Amino acid sequence: DTEVTQTPKHLVMGMTNKKSLKCEQHMGHRAMYWYKQKAKKPPELMFVYSYEKLSINESVPSRFSPECPNSSLLNLHLHALQPEDSALYLCASRQGGANEQFFGPGTRLTVL
Amino acid sequence: AQSVTQPDIHITVSEGASLELRCNYSYGATPYLFWYVQSPGQGLQLLLKYFSGDTLVQGIKGFEAEFKRSQSSFNLRKPSVHWSDAAEYFCAVAGGSQGNLIFGKGTKLSVKP
Image (cartoon, rainbow over all chains, first blue to last red; front, side, top):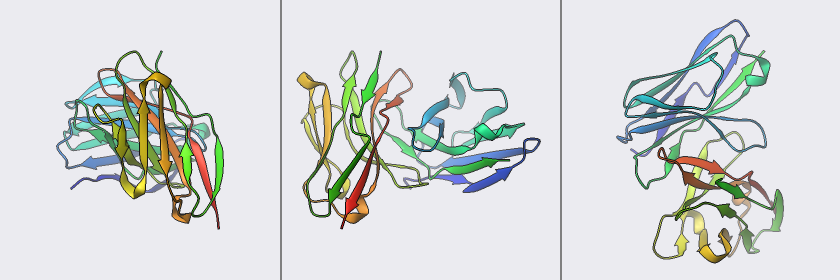
């Protein structure tokens, strides 16, 4: 299994809602990543988890809250988002060392 | 500082023609280099990677890339483009202890019939 899955595929939420994005991989990878991608731009790194611990937070606003319950699962909890947070949210995983990142299909988020 | 430059924002080629997408990087040590492809609204798919060894690397879908240290380049090539190759292409270098990817701004490829 060389796949990273993300749910949901699409999400529409109001600015007062609380929602979560989910990412899962069963490749035994020890590093997992959240990226945000706006239209016509490259992905921007948000968070990195290494061995289930948050190792990098790229100064992301606190309305985004990551969680890594176990080595296969990565969540991104969303609360009080702004319309400018609308984007494609990508999850990726990596075995570690000299290895590539595998990306999921993304969640298309729209904040109204 | 580490960086990746893709000089071409948009390239249009005819189906069956050859393709070269340019990528230049700035990195202090031996770089780990990647090319990813992204179709609209989709995730990124790895086309190929360079870590060490042979400077000409083969990837999926008939793509290849050549690492040239003297030119700090990692250009992507394909001898004959298919309409299904139309997509956004990102060059990236891995930096930092967490293997973070530093992306170029991307090159959009359009294919004319």
